[in-house]
Amino acid sequence: MAKVKEKNIILGVSASIAIYKACDIVRRLKDEGFCVSVVMTREAEELVKPLLFRSLSQNKVYCGLFDPPQSWEIEHITLADKADCVLIAPATANVIAKIASGIADDLLTCIVLAAKAPVLFAPAMNENMYLNKITQVNIQKLKSLGYKFIAPKKGKFACGKTGVGCLAEVETIIKEVKKYLSH
Image (cartoon, rainbow, N blue to C red; front, side, top):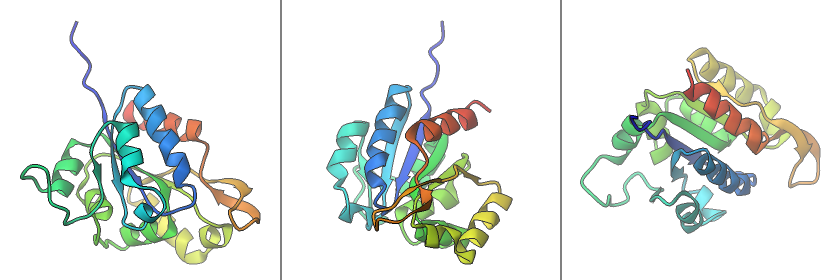
């Protein structure tokens, strides 16, 4: 019997307080048999060190656009080409805005612009930021271009307020990734 090709997931991690849930996302994707490569924004590195994601994913963690590669490769192209899916979780208003505007000024945004694989965003931000007209226009623009969104849920924010904008449940995110990969 032929072995089924392992699916490659690029997990883009941006700087949201919900970053701790990205650790569980990596673990759950690995449990499902996916190969997970984590790409962190520089701002995300201020919240969690890459070593944690390297341990969970059992893969190199990619951070800077101009970090020296371990082998001669153009990392954003190589990673984009091998991706079966790009999942950005948590996706901040900043990373959503940059991608909606075509700005590719870090490794994650370059990968998204180079990827032919489906890109899923799981937004996580304060309700004021999520419901802001600019953020909503950016989300609608990306949806109109074929990008997929996993809707945030209502919950309690780090600031103590309650509203919509909390990262979707990990189970919901995993279910959506599997759904898009089955197409």
